[in-house]
Image (cartoon, rainbow, N blue to C red; front, top):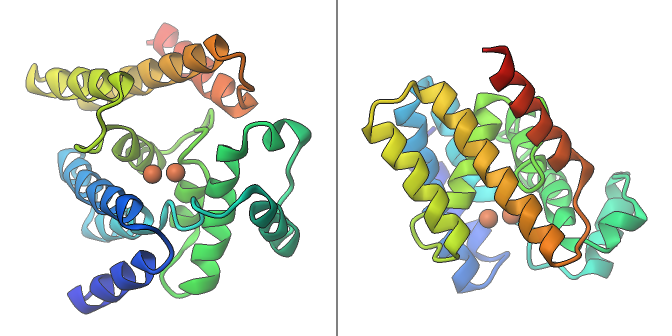
Length: 207
Ligand SMILES: [Fe+2]
Ligand SMILES: [Fe+2]
């Protein structure tokens, strides 16, 4: 992937969002690249992760009616519960819009990683997990859960924990925090988030 392509991708993404979100996007890009190196992704996967990071929030600033219109247009299913938890829409609509805008760049793994970056999934791949984590721990986030998760992850890496098992533990902590925050707010919890947490717990018990 040439640096010109990445630069023009950044330019297009910037036109879809305000400055604050674009700055977040660039930090997710940087974090995703750092994680790709840490987990020794291939050159091709590393570039795909960079593209996914740049595109992951492309529809985040669309209103709920706009999100619903995008779902209708792309044939994306949604539920009544989703409408009460509107943050979940941008991951699905973002994947579809990213694919429409950049059909030659957005392959299946990029599409799926964008689609799953908010609620996770029980069968999250390493590639998808790294985008999810990069979004959660990028350096500009100051929300206590994000600071805690960043510390937990990098402390474990520094302590030379086995990286994949430690990534699972990090994901589990992030899902626990997300679910408990949502419960304390009386908010809807997406079923995929519960399934993702349970799958990680089952995997841990098996080892
Ligand atoms: Fe997002
Ligand atoms: Fe994000």
